Length: 141
Image (cartoon, rainbow, N blue to C red; front, side, top):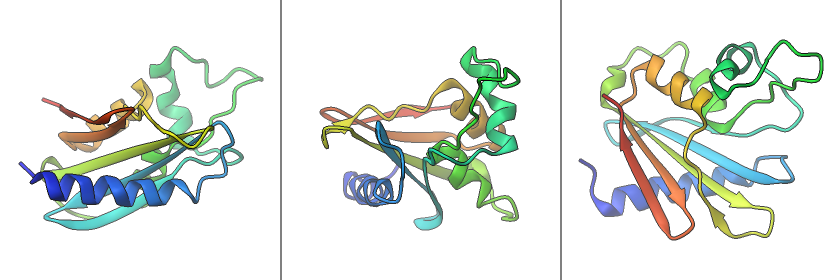
């Protein structure tokens, strides 16, 4: 398990990634690490879509094929897309997600069902995410 200092360090980096987001409701940033090295950074994008996000949006009880659907890229998906050519033991990777709400305060960044399914499919076991009062942790088995 990572030390508290490492966890806070990577959550701070995910917080920094939030500022690249163009989403006006909530800015999310994501960092994926492996053996204490950053593999990828991502953020949510309001006006860009991606087939991977569309593929997994069905896990959100959301019809990705509906004419009104927007399969905009979530921070976790953005970071995962950037790792597509990496060959690592994903079961030893960690993912960190941070959310900044519209009012500038820290918010709950637990991955949505679509992103959780993407993370699980990749084989990542450890998810750390911001909460309003600290951070949460889930281990996927």
